[in-house]
Image (tube, rainbow, N blue to C red; front, side, top):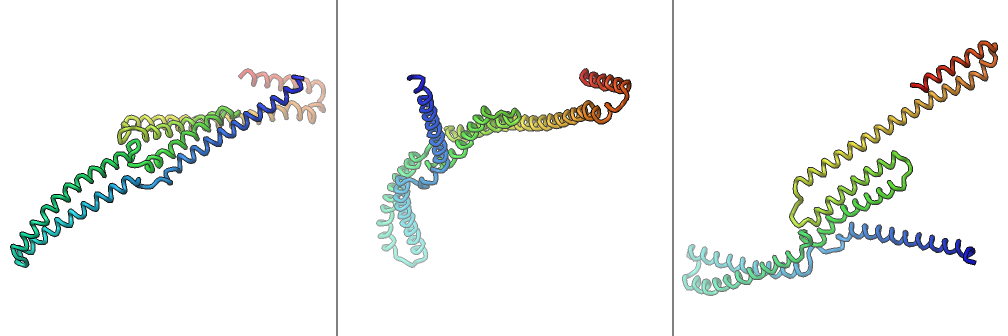
Length: 268
């Protein structure tokens, strides 16, 4: 009874594994896609930043206007367009107003700067810019991982090496810029950039060497096939068409000669 149920159980397990693989792959693909494009759906400025910005600029504009009005009054007084009493009344009104607006402006400026700091994500001005810089490196990393999986699945030795080379290139580049995104300072040390370029240069050289070696091997295979075809023609076709028609003595002598040549080739 158990033996009869075993194939059915295996089929169920196999189907369950396939479903898990499909779900896992789908989640990864959707996740990478979301990370790459989610920045589009965030606003350029958060509501808190917009509110603090509007409050600060409104008071600061009022301060600038009051300051400009006071300068106009002084200019008009110097030109004799207004009396001293009018100037005194303007000074009595405008100077306290300007001082008051300067204090309010300074307070609101600090709140505005604080909201900008709170809006930062890993050193970036806001989450929109953060995801904008994170999307492509993450995509590159997962493409490198995918190529690594292909490397493990690929049977052709040449394409295995090429796939591995591009996989390493994608992983190095992607992880480098993912590190840059999360690095607390504005930029990575210059030595890391030099190391990255050096690594990619070595990798490019290896890829070029692999491709050159592969095509050289193909040319050698083609040459060997031509030699084999020639030997086949000599040992089989020529024998059938011509050697069998020769006298036995000549036939025996020819067989000994071409066997001797073949032996020489095998010794080289």
